[in-house]
Length: 232
Image (cartoon, rainbow, N blue to C red; front, top):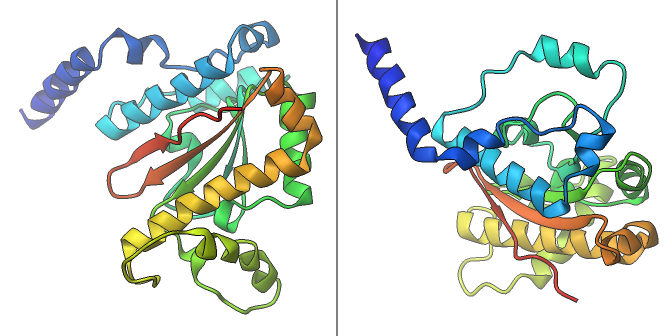
């Protein structure tokens, strides 16, 4: 009886979710032609819809083995996501994406360095991805200054976000609201670094070929909130 109730509840939620969620249940990236028909806005909307399904517990019942076999001969990802290594924020899962749908670059604090910029340039200029998304998250531990081997230099890239964050309350890592504000500032700074230091990505965005976007993932609410789009 309990399983039947769960089924009926899920069915009702599917109906409430509307055709929009169901029509983009799977990113159309099975061919170059499929991918090239999409605009950057299309891709961002697909990621938004995917997160809505994830948040409601309505993720697509994927056959990952089938997806692996279909994509083995080639890949046509629609986006590249620069995200944090936090184990609670796997980008493909929280936006209900499949194998081969996106490139995912992960580094503590979702910062950009020359190697990461090169990866983003490959994804967009060479492979044809339509969106470069910087994804931060709440409760990010990367804002705590830790001096430990190579980690010291990595976290040093995040420290400027602390100074750039306007906040009147307690400016400590124990304050979740402050941490989230810093994490958002860090996303904005990383986007700025991408535009400043990659002439390739900057030109692709200028032509409208790609969108360079930012978003924040709320670990408790399971919601991905996109930052306002860039305006010249």
